[in-house]
Structures are given as C-alpha cells and as structure tokens.
Length: 261
Ligand SMILES: [Fe+2]
Image 1 (tube, rainbow, N blue to C red):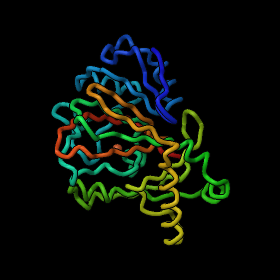
Image 2 (cartoon, protein in one colour):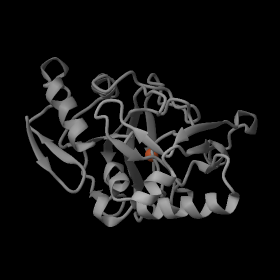
Image 3 (cartoon, protein in one colour):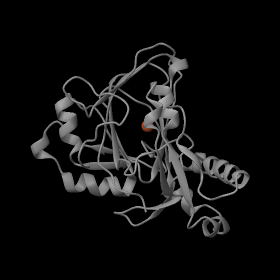
Image 4 (cartoon, rainbow, N blue to C red):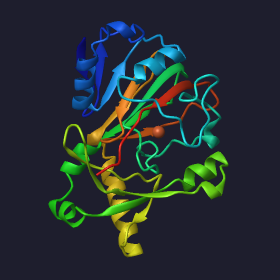
C-alpha cells in the first residue's frame, strides 16, 4: 500500500483492492486514516455486501435515524440526484451530529458520476481549531453547542414528534489522536448553550466562516469507483451540486461513534 497526500487534508491510498477483504492491510489503513482524516481509494468494485464489509474496518455500520437504506442493506443509503432545487447537502457539516453518539466515519462510494459538478469538499477541523485566535480558544473552551435534527426532519418530511436536541462541546477531543478540533456545523447547531442569543449567533457565524477557510480544504472530484472515507470527528464536508439534472448515484455508510468530549 502506498499513500499520496492530496491537499491540506486527505490522502489517496494506492495498490489496495478493497473487495479482497481477507487480504487488506487493515492496520496501515487505520493508521493512515488517523493521520490524513480523509482517505481516497480509486477504481474500486464494491457490491453492497463488499461495502458493508469494508466499513467494518472503521466500526459497526449504523442505520440512519431518518433516511431509509437500500433493499437488503438497511445500513446503506443510496444518494441520487433529485435535481438542484432538492439538493440538501450543500452546506458544511459533520454527519448526524444531532445524535448523542455521531458516527466516527462515513464511507461514500461512487456508482454513477456526472461529467461536471458534484464535487465534495473536506475541511480540516484540527487546523481550524489550531488557527483560532488564542483568546477565542480560551473563551470557548468549556462552551457547549446544542445540535438539533429539525432541519433534517423538515427536509425528509419526518414526524416532528421525533424532534431531538443534543449537546456537544464546541471543541472536541479526538479519542484516538488526542488532538482537539473545532466541532460546530451550520446545518445542525441551533445555538450555544446558556449564551446570550446575540452572542451565540455572532460567535457561531464567526466559527462557521473560519471552519471552512480555503487553506483547510481539499476538493474531491469524483470518478466512478471512488471510495472516500472521512473522519467525522475532525472533518467537515460540503456536497456541491452544479450537475443540473444529470445522474449521480452514490452509496453511503456510516460507522458507530461515541459521545464527543
Ligand atoms: Fe454529509
């Protein structure tokens, strides 16, 4: 297995065929994942069964709390183009942070790719934390944000009785690398806990702007057969549209997480 760095975050993994489950350098893959936070495996041929098997490297595949999985594989969500106006992922976020234990990793596998548009952007939140002004790091070191699933429920036409809110620290400690990262997502964070509403709004918008600075971002241009895996504990992502009504089909799996601290 070889590794090629692709940007401020992320690396391409070469010479690995993920469908050969018995023959994978699992320890090296895990090590690279912790070092680069986003891994790209190109030219893969993965059936839903293979994908579920590969996901086990990162943890137990989860069933999405709102979106239904594909036939026979409740853990695999098919993401398909519904046209630009229905596009719901064009915002910076970490997946499912409105859960008590958001998933550690997300795997996204491309089955069908338009000839233009549809890039996914990834932003390094270790760097985002590191480069925050020291005064702000100190000011927010004990601060907690309230994350809500309201936006997703509205989009999915879900039952409002399933509305839930959870609390996560604004700065999160990665349980494996022990590094701190910025952990706020515009899509899911409602407010800072016990803060003046104006202060909460201003601080959050400052953090959102900072978290996705160009210097922290790798832009992935998809080709068919790419598997990209990212670490939701220290990475934000953004799904760009820009492919009109052309077809784009992906399979997505997330893996078990733990309570952010
Ligand atoms: Fe996402």
